[in-house]
Image (tube, rainbow, N blue to C red; front, side):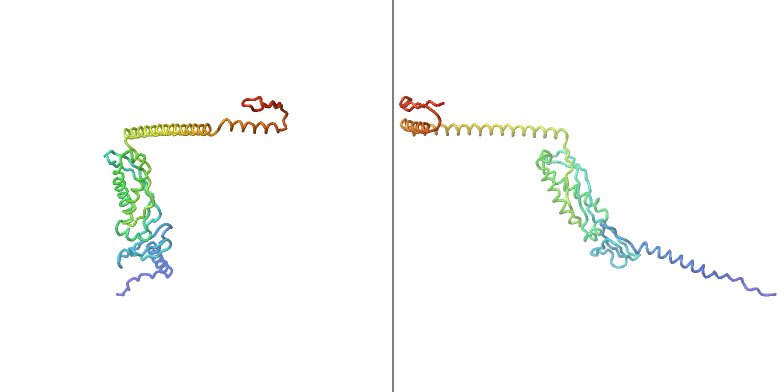
Amino acid sequence: MSYKSPPQTPIAPRNVRFAIVGAMAFIIILFLSNATFLTIPAGHNGVMFKKFSGGLEKDHIYSQGFQIVAPWNDMIIYDIREQLKEENMDVLSSDGLPIKVDVSVRFHPLPDKIGYLHDEVGPEYANRIVTDVVRSAAREVMGRYTPEQLYSSKRDSVRLGIEDAVKVRLASKYIALEAINLRSIELPEMIKNAIQQKLVQEQEKEQYKFKIEKESKEAERKKIEAEGIRAFQEIVSQGISDKYLRWKGIETTQALAESENSKVVIIGQGKDGLPIILGD
């Protein structure tokens, strides 16, 4: 009985082995490249979370550009550019009347504090913090004023009051406020009509008051003018005598007689004995 050796597995050609190793290396490099190399875009900053060495690096901020990250760490990227958020809300005036207000707020996270922002709030800070702070401040500030004040005279004071309150509260959460704008304040139609009518009446009252003051000043001016004319006449009547007038008449007659104009002078025949001059 003859013995047969078991069949041997054929050895793969060398080029096939190289292709398999190369493919595996390519897959590994591709996997690591997605997790290890990244680019932080313009207008953004990043903060690193290290799973095996201390967790979140709150004080180490990564700026825009190419970054190398270990595959077991996470880079959290924040948009640090200015953002705009609009809020429509219902508030109550000081006397309890409902008012609709449209507020816009411009803000951005503090670039060097995004680690603390991420640790305490997270990427949804705009909805979780900014919205709540703006609504709370608007209701608090606008509740100090009457509908008439909110509609007309105190609008800018209301905006500044909301802005000051929001700025302080957002700063405590590592968010910078740029500006608050009251886009619109809408009162109940009945209240708005009553305020407009009152404003028209006040304007008419001011116009009437101005007219009365103007006429009063004009009457005072005419009175002062009349008193001045009367005083002048009294001074003239007391200080000018007939002899003085006769002497001035003689001087005037002499000046006319000496002029080159042709004339006829009749001596002693005029009123008060003054000469009569007949000219051309």
